Length: 116
Length: 116
Image (cartoon, rainbow over all chains, first blue to last red; front, side, top):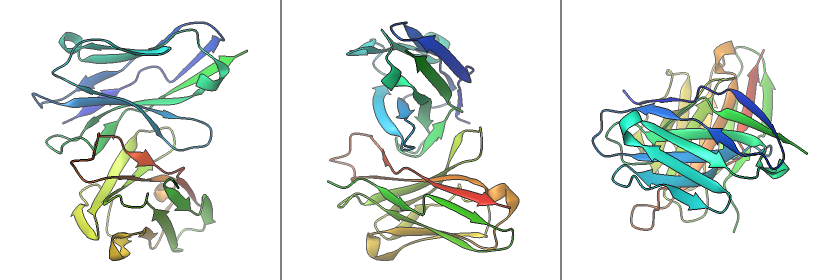
């Protein structure tokens, strides 16, 4: 069965520090997608990225970057030069087995606290 | 464009009572999902509608939960009778049908249910 593990429950950093959020997954699918969502204090989950298992290139979007390593079943998320607005809960997810890409299995989330 | 809206934002009821949660998806989104997060745990898939039809309700915990989607527009999730373990945050998400679908789910802010 699909499983997502986010071992870090909470991380506290000071503004401008770099921080990496870990995500380890288990799947029997040969091809699959991986996701990161952000949950700010307002409560809604906000889509950050979808990554196809075909593509192992790292992705960078501004201060955000993602490191996908199929060999270790990890999809880690790094925020460079963190800001207070990055404070949120971050969820890693992958689809339930054989269901396309929208019925998701989420990890338990990592709460990131960025202090000024 | 209005996002996914959920009502109520917070409901406190006693064990044995009934609660109905409502979700208004983004206009034109045929896919509608319900998810639930029990305190501190992962967000779990409950069910999936395509328009007014239930496509997958395999995540529904038991028959005390009833979801409907009238006319393929808004959806309701009724819990009757509520039990203590039903406490949590219920998220609704929507997306367009495949073709215009990038894989992103658009989430509401959630309805927090507290059963005393």
